[in-house]
Amino acid sequence: MTHFKGKQFKQDIIMVAVGYYLRYNLSYRDVSEILRERGIEVCHTTVYRWVQEYSQIAYCLWKKRNRMASDSWRMDETYIKVKGKWHYLYRAIDSSGLTLDIWLRKKRDSQAAYAFFKRLVKQFGEPRVLVTDKAPSLSCAFKQLKSEGYFISTTHRTSKYMNNIIEQDHRPIKKRNKLYRSMRTASATIKGMETVHALYKKSRRNLFDFSVCDELKQLMGIIA
Image 1 (cartoon, rainbow, N blue to C red):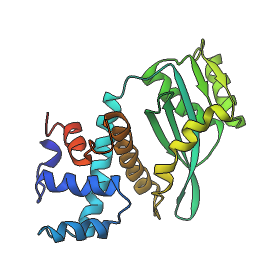
Image 2 (image 1 turned 30 degrees about the vertical axis):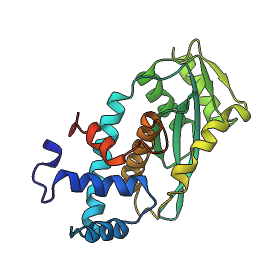
Image 3 (image 1 turned 60 degrees about the vertical axis):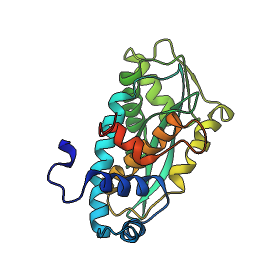
Image 4 (image 1 turned 180 degrees about the horizontal axis):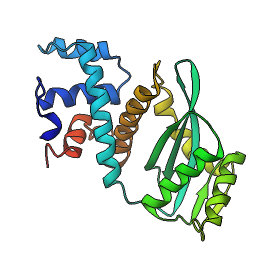
């Protein structure tokens, strides 16, 4: 695989390290310790570099394949702290709870909302219903896009209770809130976590069927 060309360690080891970090509430040192107990000596800084690299790759591959969505969307933003300052993670899911896309931004304004809405409609087409909270920036962005020919037949609803599904969906990423030291690190890591969470929601049949390592391998074409 070209994604693993020139790596010192085998792809299975890399996928286990990356998958464990993105799926579970572990530190880089925790993952390094788990591997060491299995006879594999990997420095925690190496695990960090793997997570940064393969989170981006996994997200891009997932995004290319993620083309189907229901006709009712939920969109909201949540808070992520980077270098001691609050940033905003825009997230969108459909009515069945499947992740559509995510985007980390420094500001919560109509420009950020406009760009995120446009990304969504270009990837999935126009939904029948778009549900958001009552933030003025979201309504402003929606109206601007509508004036430009997007969301022509879409109904924009701002009911607080209809948006509970995405409020609950914020929890997995919020409980993994790390002490991010840069926007680049935060963006790459969150993309990986969100990709794994999206794979989990889409592929699991019951509580015992999901394997993060197998899902990442399949995503990257390591196994059919």
